[in-house]
Image (cartoon, rainbow, N blue to C red; front, side):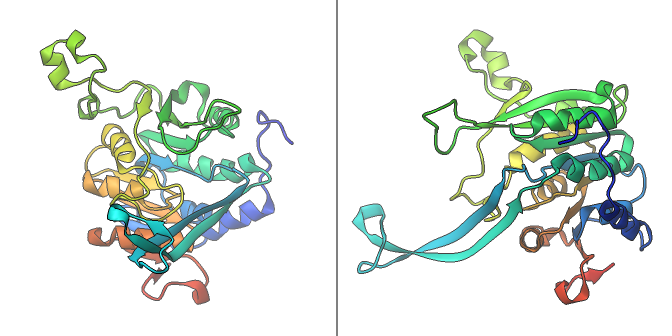
Length: 320
């Protein structure tokens, strides 16, 4: 395995992907857009210095298939496999399965070319938010230091949650890491007055005025995951909470700005951006993600673009 201090070799496959983007029609980042296709090819077709905020939540390289099964329950006293309220029996029916593989032999080599493009398309005062978990966070931090410069590292944000099973052999892993890098550490967007406030843990000690106003969060964000039974759930694996993205978008961009997510998944970044008056540009090469985003964001009337081969292209998308 190569040292993370040595620049990743750029493979011919990566070069072909980038050249494919450079040689084709440019993409317009000023309209709400969902793109199905290779993110490096799409990024190569975007102009320099366009996005004030780039948030990405790439595959975590867990080494396993990420899967989410959507189900519904139907009242069935004879064949029901579960018991609900009042002792009534219900039958479980599977509606569909959404999945993607999460294994990369050279994870940093997979990330480096798209992270270089991310820096290129940021505005001079723009920021990158890179969402990862404990498996790869330390390696990714060194790579990001190489690409952005150590002085551009602003925060390591810990998103802490308390849900799911608990190991009896080690401390349960119940957090993700979000690295914030500013393109220019001396000039960046940070809208302090737009930070959502949280309750004091001991409001009696804070006094009534402060308790009523609440306090600003630290770099540890306690926030629940998307409820498996809640209205926010899209059924896509690894969906992140809307509140998490709204905090990032509101503080690190301004109304009218363009926000980019090129591992867009369920489209949470797009919904947060749209609801806060920003323009979103979302890219993903997973067709399940593409369909989830189209349904979720249909009310914002985004441009829907496919960079895929004609026989795989959704019928109502635009070929670019």
